[in-house]
Length: 295
Image (tube, rainbow, N blue to C red; front, side, top):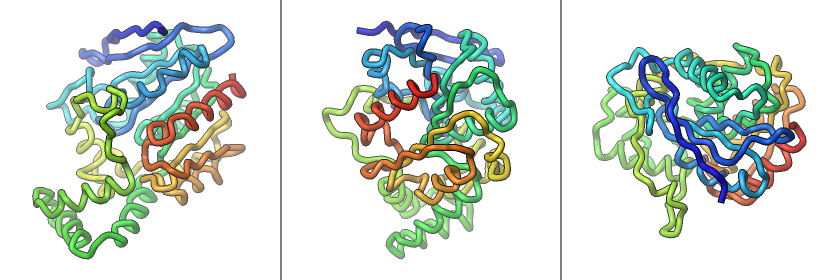
């Protein structure tokens, strides 16, 4: 059984929770995981704990401020890319992560792209951009395209909610649940790992203030997120991973693949937005090979 260490880093007068799995190795660089949301938690990343045992590689995950064990609300002014990038910088410094691989999923991938393009950090051996996006505009456009394949009454419920900014109707909630079940998550089976059924403290305020009320209405602080023109400047090795029925559609993934020099892309045929859950064995095998190649 690998060693698991849980602790907190002081940040902005609050606490950022982190979880370290396994021991540091000289020849295998740690893998730092950036979860989605904004406002989700590290929980689902625990399905990757097996890397520490099977690959003898240390894995580090954390709950970004505003959610999970780092929960904080009543501070909507904090939910900006600057807050989360600075937290990432301080965590690397706090844990002496001079050399590291970074995996960002969904919003976490956006954070990785912002970090790579705007801050040009040293000591990042590679990025894994998992089910993420290069701009809010392309994400919004693709989700709205897909809404048109839903039943007419659901399209109308979503249109009414977005146009009125009233997201309280039962019809809207049912339509969003249908949309997310198609492109985000599968039903959690009874024998699922505990980390997938564990009750989490989601950062709802962080999500709404940072992104918006749903996946297809970016009106928060990240609404102008657009790194299309900056992606060609990334020189660090990048692996793109996405599912065939992912919120990150193959069109979005290919846009990143085409723009990032020498990028590689792994498309998971049977996955939605959480490839590492839906096709865990394949995902772990992909990571083992990629990380070994870029240590």
